[in-house]
Amino acid sequence: MEQPKEETSERVRALNTHAPRPTGAYVLYWAQMNRRVSHNQALAYAIKLANEQKLPLLVYEGLTCTYHAANDRLHTFVLEGVPDMAAAVRALGAGYIFHLRRRRADANDALHRLAQNASCLVTDDYPTFIAREHNARLPQKLALPYYVVDASCIVPMSKLEKREYAAYTIRPKINRLLGQYLKPFTMPKLAHRWQSGHEDLHLEVTPEGIPALVASCEIDHSVPPSLTFRGGATEAGKHLAHFLQSNLRRYGTDRNQPAEHATSNLSPYLHFGHISALEIALRARDYALEHDFAADEYLEELIVRRELAFNFARYSDDPASLDNLPDWAKATLAKHAGDARDPLYTYEEFDLARTHDALWNAAQQELRLRGKIHGYYRMYWGKKIIEWSATPADACRTMVALHDRYALDGRDPNTYTGILWCFGLHDRPWTERAVFGMIRWMSYDGMRRKTNSEAYRKEIMLIEQSGRDSFRLQ
Image (spheres, rainbow, N blue to C red):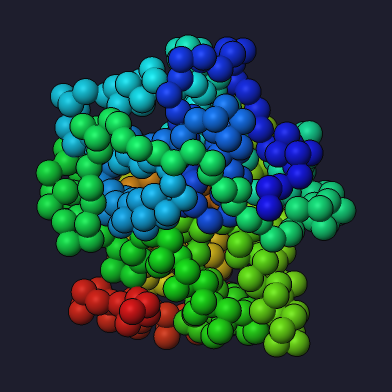
């Protein structure tokens, strides 16, 4: 069944004032961030418009060589999701165009060509990465209605009308609204099937052809694909099933033990939209109820903490800027700006994991090899970059750059929130000390006491030596 009209309107924004083009041959859905069919409210809205206008639907997904830090890892992960997306879109009865812009000299007009024949355009409302840039720039350049739809958050971002200070301020608001939105979602049926058109823009992607496609692109070829994660809705489903069956019950006790592998590892799939937070939350809630245990700790992270990050990014002019810090954090960092830092490392030394700290080096190698760092060690990783950088600004730039280069879950609201948390965002003052002032500090000895850091370090070393990850799902 279709979602209630009220919820649809809470998720949709019109970014220009154009009326639907009367000569349009189809409704166009541009899958920028939500590269999936299941539990996709943006795609559902596009279907609704197509049915109202008695038109077919065309879904467009693109990948260009020109996004910041484009490399083999990110390209491969996106391309691995294309066969799943193509099959699911065609099963709806919609058309599907995947366009790969391989070289900077190639034409950059695929979206404009598709929009010329469309009655209106629907795309994803997303507060970071290239979707944020496109949605700020393109609506006034296209002569058709341009709608953005929030298909990333369970509680629509619009329901929170200002930037929240911390988890404790957003939690009661989210929990008050959650019952309205944490409900099963069924995609509406498309009334008019796609026939044909624009095949000249389309590239058919097969799993076996992906390495050659990546090699043909004018991108950074020095960052190889992840040894752990493959892209796509099918892979996301495997990770979710594994998490529910093996880890959800112990998540509350073991999530901060990286060597125990109790987390979901779904952040890359959430970032690229291969799976929705709504589907994950419903499956986790229902699995826990069926097996008579609570999933509260996981749902807190997936819903409250994640949607705090989206709220922050939505109401920030630049989510990567230290200007977002609370006044107390800015003041204490400024007070300690002249404190001696010893040792000091360059960006290249951080990148290559060449510090004196074996645990930090292992966390950085996990980022380089797997494409993500376990969340608990990522906090330690960030705190130490602050400690070993000449200025907080240098530290922030290093963290952002390393995520841009290696992280499959980088450039995400959670990324920027996690980085700035290291500097005091969404946190409180602690005991004052050198360099950090009253910003929370984390120590190597503390990590050794609280976690099995030696087991983690050996695990990462084995991946580095063998070039294989035994935790990659088959």
